[in-house]
Length: 535
Image 1 (cartoon, one colour):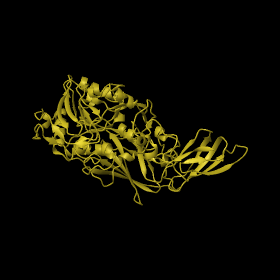
Image 2 (cartoon, one colour; image 1 turned 30 degrees about the horizontal axis):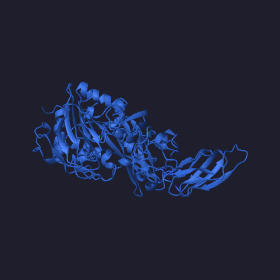
Image 3 (tube, rainbow, N blue to C red; image 1 turned 60 degrees about the vertical axis):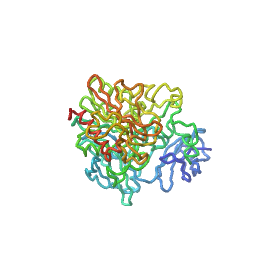
Image 4 (spheres, rainbow, N blue to C red; image 1 turned 180 degrees about the vertical axis):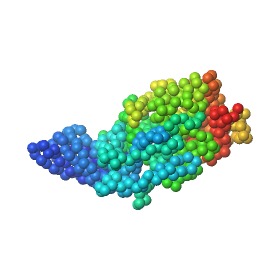
């Protein structure tokens, strides 16, 4: 009888896992059955339906005991966690003076430090060495089934004693912080922590795109890009042979109407920063170049140029911990793709009705609506993208559910030029944003970039353009030179209330801001004007 499957944290099938099934002691016939998982991760055993205590063990993975019910025709999904170094704080976003619990998974003793990431990496404090008396007691336990929906629940077991709780109080200074975990054998892992101010300190607020971070997080086997709707019934053995992303020539990411929830309560390997990497170093890897490590480059630039800022997570904005009326200027950057309806209309009202000033220094932003089930879980409302594109009546996933984001940002993402990068060409050199650059119409700027996934310039990776839903007074300042007319549109417009919006429409802009003088000066010109530092 097929009992179930065993998979790791990536939902990859685990062969040769040893399982011991023991029926409940209350059973009249006490019985113990041994089984091993097959190459597909499948577990077959001669068992009657009912409740069992199951012990699982495999070298290189954390063993565990679970209580489960065998049901004929309903395979159970066992999950094991590999021996590695991982961690996350919970909550992942706090205000100064608030506590988070650090939750670290390690097969050996580890040292933990807290660092602040700005123009320089600054060691805040050493938090100490962590080990336990029990063997492998620093190894975490994951739930079975699809814990990308529910969260990994680390520290749920073994930390009932208050003396074992592992809390860190957020520093007074707002910013992007990283925990550094390190073992004697050489393992290293870093993970981010967003610290907002206890109360507003400056005129400028910057939002971390942490909803997008969660959408791209594959820990547990699902993200909004892999198994977006649900986990497959059978764990993966070979992605190229099994996942529709690779086997279906007509595949689109979003071909259904409903999608399973995604929990924030998971480690984020996608936001890992190597221990010796500095803010001016190239951004290597597939994901780092459009998530927290790339946003760090913008924060480093702000500090290099002496712009004081308060830092918030998007989730804090959604739950009302950021009052836009406390600020003059808001920056969203890099890849703020996923937003709630409430966030969008609060920002739009601030800009269009109350004179707020917005810098959108990213691409493919506000492109899809998310619903919050609670403070740790979202449902991403992708809809059927295949059908939406076929109909051709809407501009984004956000548009049919809310409105086109071009109404606020002035631009909207299109697939033209996707995964290419190039410099911008000046279209309106007389505009004040180009002051001091000596650029003329037709000149190129923004060729240097730290972005290594799509090298080539400040217009790239994913790009936004003016559309029929852009405000009537939007001004085109520059245009990316990407192929297929796919270059980003740099735009600006004013609102009757005195609000202003400046949009660059490119994910790679923050990757150029530290290494291209024109990109730096244009951004500084806009920021100083919006902050009232120049006339």
